[in-house]
Amino acid sequence: MELRTIEQFNDWWTTGKVRANLLKSYKRALFHQILKYRDDKQIILVYGLRRVGKTTLFYQLIQHLLDDGVEPGNILYFSFDVTKAGIEDVLRTYEQEKLRRNFDAAGRIFIFFDEIHKAENWQNELKIFYDLYPNLKFFICGSASINIQKRATESLAGRMYDFKLSPFSFKEFLRWKGIEVEFREWQLYERSVLPLFHDYLLKGGFPEILDEESEDKIRHYLRNNVLERIIFVDLPSEFGIKDMELLKTLVELVATNPGMRINYDALSRDLKRSKPTIINYISYLEYALILRRVRNLRPGLMATSRKMRKVYPTNVAFARIFAPESSPGIGRVVETVILQELDAEYYFRDNTTEIDFILKNGRIVPVVVKYGGEPELKQFLRTLAKIGLDYGFVITRDIYKEEKINGKRILMVPAWAFVLFKDEFIR
Image 1 (cartoon, rainbow, N blue to C red):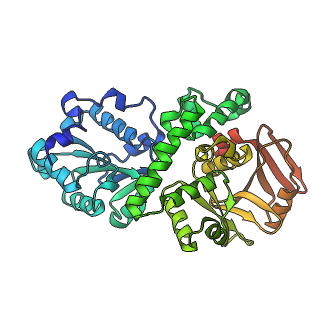
Image 2 (cartoon, one colour):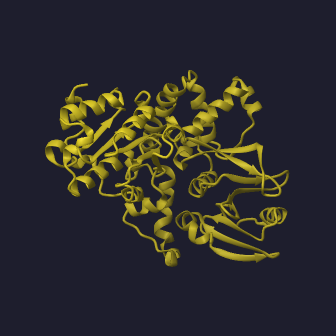
Image 3 (tube, rainbow, N blue to C red):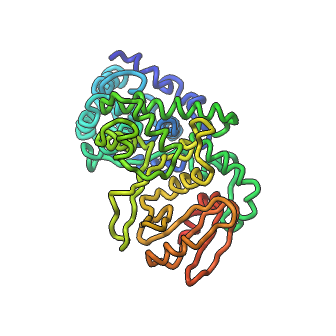
């Protein structure tokens, strides 16, 4: 490899700073979290969907290092998404032609590898350099569409801290817009924040479209730059997938029917593909962080059923990117954003009753979405009685009140407020 191939990524070697157009003024919470691990030996892995801001995060970290007095030549950035290369080739060229001294005599070196999964045998090569040169601090990132976390965990156990970078949360979205909502006064903000909540439902927190106004452009961006890149480029290159149209069909089916219960036999008949193929392809889309399966929590609250799983898009914007006339109703869209925010893994359903989401992080927290008029609570109350709980949350459009009915405490909370302050409401 020629040094000039690497130099094109590292303007700060000559200018002393990252180009302004590569930086953003807003810093995600993950930026500050990663800085706590700056002086640790372990590799920092950042993974997540395409276009969520991983590269921007790296440039901000690099600028922070420069501001902190790190020698510009001691910071290396390389993107394997742009140039096909091997890790050893890049590092040896940098060592020999830029540093012009061996790594073990070069002091502290910070190395940022973008889209590292595209480098062949990257886990093993990285492990070798990590073990040989304790002074090298690696920051690596890759799209979750390549299941990078699993591979890194298997090969780099004990050598790595991993962090997931998600699209902007609704709270971050509001901060981007210059709005800070205080929990103790949240009801005063409803009129100004509710329209922005619906704006967020369309954009899903992807940084490059936060200020975009055109719905057509938003949908086009998400289809072309996120979903289709994963479906037609990332997953086929990783898993050797040939039937990309099936991937796309499954994504569109779930996106337009969030919360659909999976019947693999029916999908096999309807899509004219084998049942194992359908199961595998949905698993690939889960690896890609495009789809998410939610398990049915069975009676006794200790077991889950392999049957009757529901599937959702992982990001609420995916439910709105196909033809507007095929978009799900607003209630299903809000259900998707609640799932996204809760990171829920379970729901409950039997022959007569259903609860949308049940959190199981130390205790059972039942949540049902009723985004319309005055919610009907009879079924919810029956379900709470059936699973032996005396409280639950009902997510509404604009109703906030607490009721005590037949010994059950029901807290109704507007969706936008619940998304912002779930930890305060669920205590």
